Image (cartoon, rainbow, N blue to C red):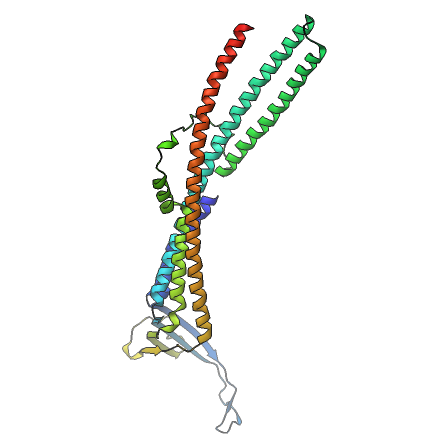
Length: 363
């Protein structure tokens, strides 16, 4: 679901980009293809030059029709506002792309971790079941020894208690395995999936001592989604400073209007799409404004807030980089320690197997 939401948000990039370009970067275009209408007017009373009411001797309905077509171009900018609008939309688009990449990376990591966790829980369940079988053999041995008077009733009861405790451990481990499968299914997000049964897979074991620590740190600082998101935040704050200083620039307004209008009695002008140069009217205007002192103190406060926001974003980027570097180095140390622990555990298994073999021969 997280990835699907990010993909849905990413679909807004195209419409919003077009809206930004057509609404703020390039002149706004208003096209009036057709406006046509029909109206009637009945006036029973009029007024003379002194405002005195006069009766209308011919109080009849008067019907008129009209049709209008027009085209208008308007472009209003303050300083580099159109460039700031373009940069802001580009930064928003990049943020959605980063959000999708972050969601995909998060889901990939969660699925991998939960997959290995499910395999681990299943292996632990197999171990508990093997221990249960050993506990049953121990109980049978205790009962035979009790029959031979070489063990007491207490030994038999202790063996029986160990069997029951192991059954409880199996039940708890089975619940942990089912919980791991449920977590994996929830992360996948598909309710139509059949019951999940992870296939056994070899562990991705490698020698962590061969990893280049500095290369890993450099890669993390360049590709880590959190670092990239903070970089996008710094870019957005920088654009915010540019937007907050637009008031220091002159404003420019350009407009051009073209339209033709026809009005007649009755219905002659209804849906009249003909072109008549005599009915065409055109106008244009150019206006320059100097809004430097409009809301001066409010604008200065907004500019100061934008600069503080930029500084905070830069400090946040520095903090995220430090945390990312620390996490990479600490995880690498833990990985190397786990590799050494694995090597010692493998050696311990070999020693334990040899000890078991010798014990069985003596028994």
